[in-house]
Length: 136
Image (cartoon, rainbow, N blue to C red; front, side, top):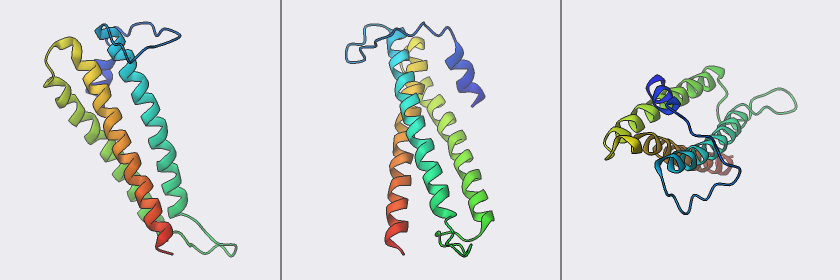
């Protein structure tokens, strides 16, 4: 995470009010568009993560667990596993960025990789929630 934070903090261009990501004309615009995609995917991932925790920790009117995990340590492990996944995503995308051609492409490649992996994990969380609801 530190590596990507350092790379992404390098000369961030000013974000225009309107951004046309369909017609990317330079590396600054590519980075801004990639950063917007990452922001959007991060919000979706966080939302689904919270829903997963809620689903895991549901209780009935009598205070009995009805979620698919009744052990609080399992929820804590889920949180740790998610944190480990975020670290994996960051390092994976750092190396993917380093493989891109041209030093100026590295920041946008890293951002797009992180956004792509966020969407994949978001879809996985949604699938888990469907499976858990069907499991009742």
